[in-house]
Length: 358
Image 1 (cartoon, rainbow, N blue to C red):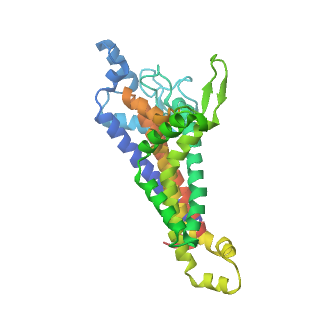
Image 2 (image 1 turned 120 degrees about the vertical axis):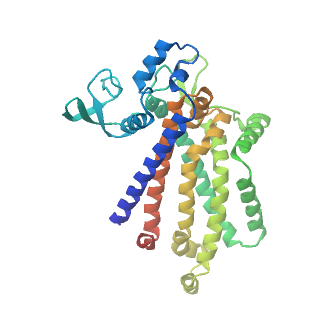
Image 3 (image 1 turned 30 degrees about the vertical axis):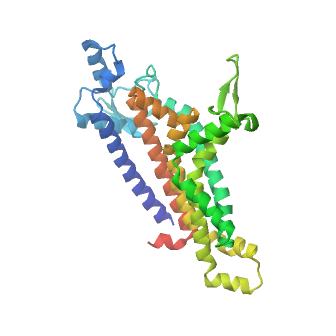
């Protein structure tokens, strides 16, 4: 088991390194001069030179790449010279010096995601820490809805195969898979937040934290989570229903299930004690992919519902060409995606030990 986990971690690190390289090339080579983006319309030649020197934009592409990897690496190398890009100061980020070789000091630190171009030099890590929890709450709520309802409807669909119950559930799941999330968001906001607002009490837009009318107190508005969570959970719900139905039907046709029925166990006992665990394998795999994808797919839903999460922040950063925020956000989402997939592979190997031998 330990060897299996180490292999997954090794390939996860290689994948993350590839993601870092692609992100750097995509957002450094294509957009243009980042120094001009930072200064917008206020630049002059002297200011541009200062910015390029401060952030290493005047260096070669390979040197900039090494700077970027060095900033992201927990174990990194920095110059003691104040005029160099890699000079460390206490107000840059927390670090623990390990040893020095000449003018180079090796330190242990948190990954440095640099500073926003548009938020007065605000740390990208701080921007992400302020918005990611809201996105995580939305994603967890959505996947919880998809898991609970998907497993229940999937079991009902399998138990009542080819009946009207099965057909209605199939129609619902087909619609859920075919409708894009941004369209569902607009439709739900209009119907439940506008047309039926008198009965639902829900708003078309709103975030988890809101400020009172006097601007003095911040309070949690849980009802604002309902519509975006439902919208974001529709497509994974449809997938879980179909996977659960097909997997359970396959398991129920196996010999050991017929033996359990021959012993006098009813349908509920057979499913609960014998079939459910084995039928969950493909569902667990699908949920992992959808949960990680929700962190990226929440972009449209958050923006439409004005949910103050990482997805909405990415849209704002794209509109303002705030490259460090975009790069940091994409990197964080990719890292979470890789970590979730590794965790699910471990869970999957526990459910089915044969996976470790492949």
